[in-house]
Length: 232
Ligand SMILES: [Zn+2]
Image (cartoon, rainbow, N blue to C red; front, side, top):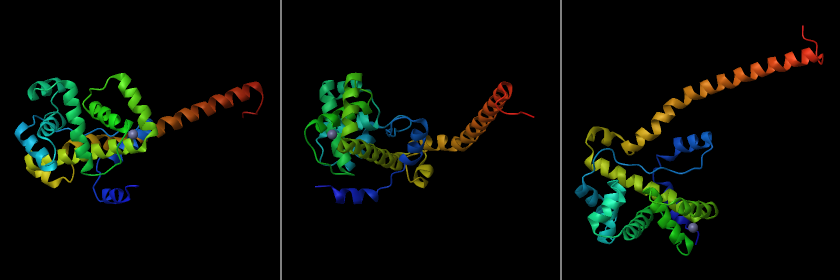
């Protein structure tokens, strides 16, 4: 049960967001974690719900509404819970269920045990609703569990596809959305650091070379002064 077929079909799905960010993360030495795309500007809740219904027709209605409000609409959880008439823990559960279904649209993974809890913590973290203790537990689980690391990656990928589909259907600038093969929100996130990267690298190299030259001069001066080498 390796999920080989799932992996193969996933390759066909465009993954627009990771390349530049992966490189940046490596350069900066930060842990790799994809940041989900968010829709620019106010989100029409009716359109958001319709989009979620199209993507996840079999999901229970409350979970669809939760994902439309919080996942697409970026509504704070407190507000969304009030609007749906559920407690915040219940909203957390609904969102985790919706996001499991969302991830399944791009990848099937084996389930069970602590991984179910991890999926919920991942969902909570996406909304900034995870306490530090939960975050530490989640990170240590993700370090040892490739399955859950894959879940997180695929969930972000599926989320971004949903955001892209919404933009394609409801973009305030249809020409831009139609010409783009990925969400405009992601275009902004990915391209500005990439554009800056070459000049930053250039400055970085010039700085390092300057420091090395200065060091060499100091070493020579010291060696000359101590008589270790003859400085003309
Ligand atoms: Zn796991």
